[in-house]
Picture 1 (cartoon, rainbow, N blue to C red):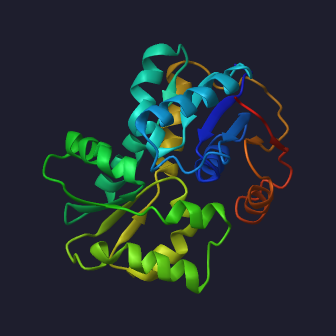
Picture 2: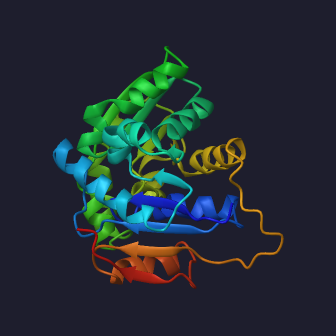
Length: 268
């Protein structure tokens, strides 16, 4: 099926998911939309998150997408079920894949979860984890300073390390935790800093790998894989509602989408 896959996020964090999707599904075409103008979503009211998510979805539907990836934990927690109810295309969120990754990793059955205030308060990860293994014990910590730090491009150095250390005191002090879910797709961008602060005792997990596997399985189930015999490897189309500068730098330096076209768009 020669139609693109759509990926939405509150900002630049979803590029971590997009990178893994493109790695696992090189023949597929992708359109990414990050709402950097109104980022972060994590501290906003649920009705605002719902409205903004629907505006992104409706914009991407104009590209005739065949599948939608909600690469935002806050939007997944608040709006995913509603999107599945009203849209006629397959939809994949990032919370259930992240939970599966943690179940595979943990030996102590004690899992830490860090995310935005909305994601942590929703307890969506706790629910997903306990659906798989009722014995899992969780500690959730909101890290509201992470997304503004990342969106500004300050992803390394002493300031980033200090903010990470201050935010993860609870996780650092709980010796039973051996797996940490990065419950926001922005967070893998500072994963090296997080791993440096926590040390080798804790396995730090992004949902990107499992999300890629779930998208691949959905394409197979719905018989939606691209059927092109010969294909040029094309970088995704990357759209943003806000500034291009940080997005342009990160998509080149970290994700190597050097040939991606980056455009600023209005979705209102």
